[in-house]
Image 1 (cartoon, rainbow, N blue to C red):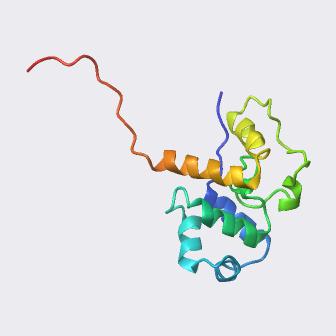
Image 2: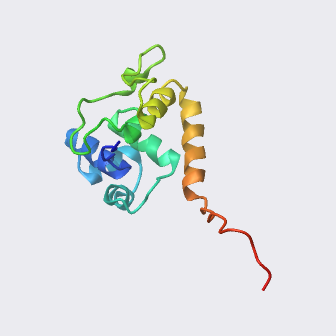
Image 3: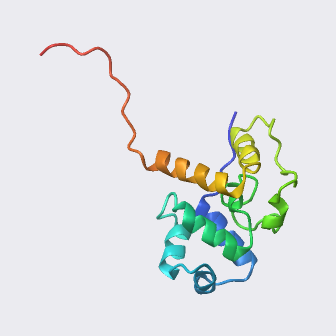
Length: 144
């Protein structure tokens, strides 16, 4: 079973910024971040931006932070302008938690978390992404 390409955080950031007709400089001003930071994320030079950075960008774009992880977006133009109100308490996520696609299930569950829990979850994922990977054992050790 092949998995469709998932747009990167940088591609989704650029799509949402362009969808709102903003330049990188305007987004930098609105978010309080440096233009170079936005450029670096959009180019993909930063694999996983800090959670606080993502939250500032989401607020400046008036979207929910989960939009940066939404595998249903095309990566070029958001299918719809999802605002934080779409994910307000009591709002139903538009993703199916019973989906066979694990990314859709993860995002559906993520959307049920409170904003504080979302920040904590992003921080945990960031730690996992930045942790050095251990190589798998290569069989029994033999004395030299």
